[in-house]
Image 1 (cartoon, rainbow, N blue to C red):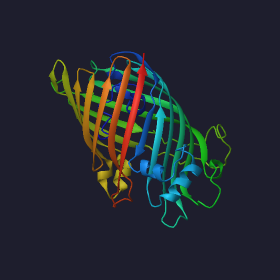
Image 2 (cartoon, one colour):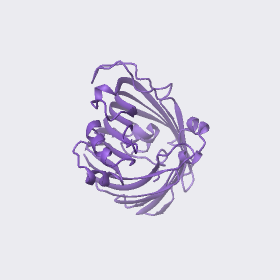
Image 3 (cartoon, rainbow, N blue to C red):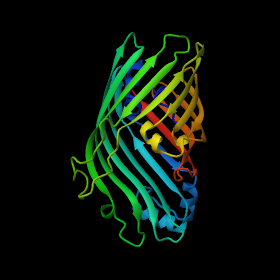
Image 4 (cartoon, rainbow, N blue to C red):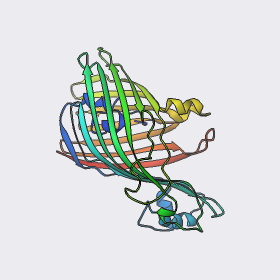
Length: 322
């Protein structure tokens, strides 16, 4: 749905996206296995030019990008085993991400890498028969980060470049729903309330004196509509504006726009389309009582502020629930 998610989320990912949406859950369920894999359209070309088996390993990626210079690389994998019930949830989140690009001369590799592990817990209060939902989630997160230009001729082990630390982070979400046919909804999420500063718990997973970049507090807002077409079909429309504070400082405001549409057929098949920033998105989901499969594609602007550059990405996810 083009990344327009805070008004429409209604599963365990509410813990990460909008804790107020825990109040929209109708059942209790746990997610055992839910791997999500993501890569950009250039990933396959880079791999075919120089194969590798460790997509988040700095040295292996460096060797491949040396063969495919001036080509943007993106890979992400994550999992989120969790248990959620109405107004409460808990989960263990793990993510690895690598964005990198070797310059034409082969003398520098712009690198952004994350290795996150987090324990997440959230709760929600329903007020006025659920028309007002106020939720909060807290997380203890251990992060290993690389955010720098790396010299390909130098050491490539993670210990030479990564920062490491742990932090407590908090998100607060609010959903206001009108008591009318299309359920008009206004949603806001305050992310990283007070800032998430990785100055605690250093040395949990590696030894270094540098700490990951502090994540400053910011806000996402959205509006949504949810028309019901029949007993077996309904739709969701949403427009979302992310990172209001950061957007106010940016030259290109379209980087923060998200627009999405979803058609729900019998809670079994979901068809999705939208706009992420200025680029089209599309997706499909099949969901049974205990199994879920998702496929999606979206475009991400990876250019400098004011200079658009699309990076087309593809996502595959499966989940098994009880």
